[in-house]
Length: 166
Image (cartoon, helix red, strand yellow):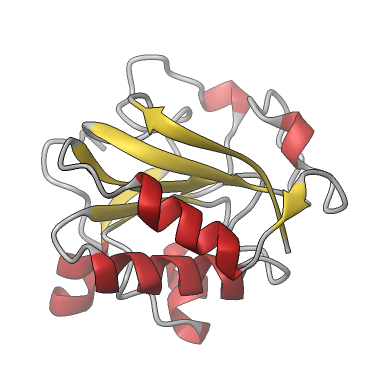
């Protein structure tokens, strides 16, 4: 597994100041993707335990509100184990900071095979250029959902994050 880049202070991918990691590799190749340089699974840098340690260290300051995991495709079968391990280790260290993940896969398919309980918010669905809307919060196209994973697991139905219009 590989990652493209780490941002130590990111204010555009989730609420507050966050640490972000962009995973490397994606097979969706959505038309109009804002990160085409992340599509090649051989690009970027090796993702390993040192990467996780670095992210945890970068998130230590109180002003950092959480971790955002984007791509590429963090939930691709080649990346999902590392993504979920990162989310788990992050939540162990910072239970009160949030983990947000962006994926082109749908929640329903992912949740059948994987424990997503260390993720707070999942933005799911492939970006669709024809549904692009620059006024949408935390997503690029209107088909994408901003899912509150904790409420979704508790209520056993998809719950959209409060304050985010459908």
